[in-house]
Image (cartoon, rainbow over all chains, first blue to last red; front, side):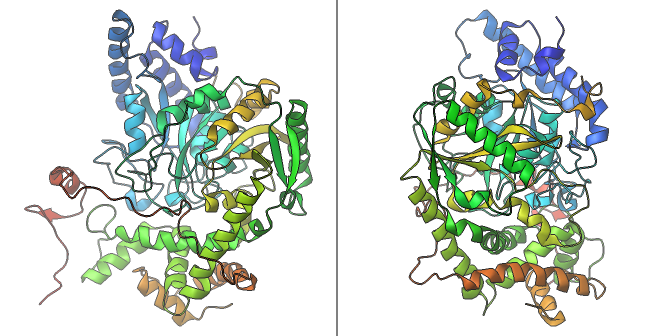
Length: 501
Length: 95
């Protein structure tokens, strides 16, 4: 059989073909590696590709698949992704793999242990396909802030893919991987998912372990995933989520499997439409696509309800105080002593710290560390940091009130579609505005996802669904119903036709 | 608001980031722009609002006080810039 349709057909057919052993994990991994070899030089979506390491993992998976097939019933439930190659954002420590976080600081860092998320993928039988490019330390909304160079959008190579998980999104969009991991602190999964035309989910804060996930802003960071459909996201989330005692904010819960949420009717669900998200900031092209998607939800039997999130307009200033404050603290660990880059030029300990950090960090990371130090410093703490935390409360309260009259919220992911490479480089704050509809969700800790919902002048547009705490299942249910009635998620970028497949 | 060169130097020192004189003007401009954005917070009425430090609002979980870590010093020091006999080496700090 030809392997190519299987590579683009979603996770479940791939898992079944591997379990039936009609195709081997090694063949699948090699086929994706072949695509990567052709397309990655154009996209720069991956930082580390190590075919030998991937094929070793695939060979091991094949051995396990062979023994599982000779002992019926053994291990089939435990190995939900047996032999499936996954691209991981280069922020998840994976033992033996270089884990750079997109930074010169960690250019030489071979992780000595596995992140909680990596452990779970391994336990599910998945293999590591490659390590995805990202904005340095996840700070960016365009993937232009990587030590390894910008990632290009598969739909238009002159445009950004979004960020910070831009490499992960671009890989899935270009068919270089069936799925990829990401992290979302202010929109870093949903925004690149929207701009690359793939599905991406940011779970509830505390759903996915942050152990071994290199910290940016700890009260906002949450791991999640990219795939070609909501159905695939459900499968990935079943693998990734769960309590981890090594992450003190990880929450122990007994929820039904997310895979049970898909394939269901959505009749009668109340979808809240925040009126503030459809104001003057929203571009006409994105607005039209999102409104058409809302009409489709209505056609599926959902009831559209007007809701208001007045404080969400303050989310960007609040975020750019809270996230840098937490970042300045988290990134103090990079000191040139225990791991990472050390300057060659120092005379005393202070010079060692200051020069190692000046050489190891890029411009955007430095800006955020400096802002964080400023807002936390004596005399400014109350005016900036404490005030931002109070505004954060107002934003969270708005959502809580809105969810009294609706089951989920729907709206745009971004005000505009993907911008041109370099077009926001003169003023760092102009890029920040791309996250106006995603940041409020992180501040409130809520689950949210983005699914493809059409095009704006040939560029993908995302529909954002936001749920109450722990209601990822409901979001996946609605996203899946939407995808069963539309084909936006099946569109492929023309820019790469004939390149990957 | 506009940050002075001295204020930029001060936060760079607090951040343990070496900043050259040539970098100062650009940093001054960029940081001032970000603080202008952050200053929008001042106009919001937050009288009586309790700060939200953490989305869940839950306190820190407690665990039993026993050793859970295994000794992986060798693996962790394999990625260190400079070690000797199990110790991390830094320039002399006491004469």
